[in-house]
Structure formats: structure tokens, C-alpha cells
Length: 231
Image 1 (tube, helix red, strand yellow):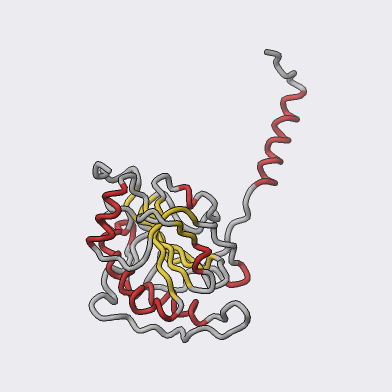
Image 2: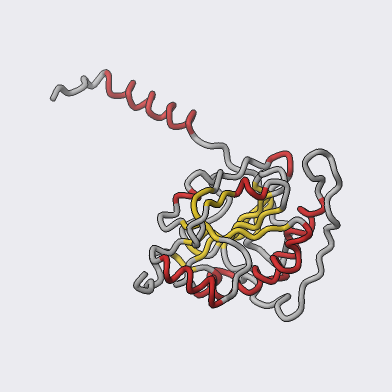
């Protein structure tokens, strides 16, 4: 193999550096509007990027897409049956679906189990009323903007506005109180076509509000830091 001359090497290095700079992704501008939920990052409407085109099959084998819920506020929750914080937050997500489903809010799970039976058992044990996409490889989240959420641990939750854009995310477990505080303002935003949104003041349901708020790093489970069940 021929070697580049010493005179050419600095030029190649300079071009490589410049190429890397030009290809770098501009950091996503986010805010932390909820002091009680420090892991929530929100995005102003003018800065919101399009949500990834989540699509595939549900745990029951039916076609399922994020686009099916266009016009609604969608809570996209990444989970797995072997994840302790996922089990802790599942009842809160289910209660929010039950209370706000007829007011324009839809919870959509994205499941990371490799064992379909384990995922279905979780869904059955918690009587979840919302569907979940199967995603054992995690590929559904490959196109998320950098810096929005830590996808290396579970759970994490994305919030998609009614125009199909990413409005924010939480890296870690969410409580029912967290969900109400986040989806309320999104519900109040104008719907596609200029129609006013549903009122954004959401009262937390009984039995779950205020419990399990995220505090520090114990709210999520790293893919490499927990011994998985034999999925």
C-alpha cells in the first residue's frame, strides 16, 4: 500500500476536521420548566423537530404507527419487563390513558424486550390499555435529536405535540403528577387547523399523583448495569 507523503498528510487532516465540523448537528435548544421534575427537557414550539416515524408491529402483531395518532398529544414511553422503574411507572401511565384518552391524549409504549412472551405478560399483568410497539433492537430511537434524552437506559418518555413534533422528554421514571404537568400545556395548544386545544389544566387522578417523582439517577436502569431476565 502506498503511503501519503508528509506534505499531503496535514492537508488531509485539515479537510477531515472541517468535514467533521460541517456535518455536526446543532445542539437542540431545551428548557427545564419543572423544578420538581429536573429530568424533564421541554422544547419551545418554534424549535420543535419532527418526531421520528415510529412504526412497526404491536405486541399483538398488528401494524402500529405514531402517525395513527396525529392530532393528539402522544406520550411515547420506552420500557421493558425486566426494568424495575418501568414497572413502577406503568400504573401511572395507564391511569393517564384512562383519564385523558377521550381528551386528546394517547400513550404509546415502545418495548425493548427480546422475549415477546415476557412483554405480553407485563402488558397483561398491568392491564395496560395502551398499545406498545415491539422494538428489541432500540432502532426506533436512532434518529432522535442528540441531547434530548438518554436512550442508553430505561425508562424514558417522549412527548409529541398534536402536529407530530417533539415537545420534550424525561430521562427516567415519570409519576402521574409529572405526566399531568407536562401534557396539560400541550393539550391547551392549538390543534392542527387552528382549532383551540382542550383545556390544559389537568387534575391528577386518585391513588397515584405525586408518588414516584424522578429524583437523581436511581430513576432509570442502564442497559449494561442491570442483569436482565432471560428474555
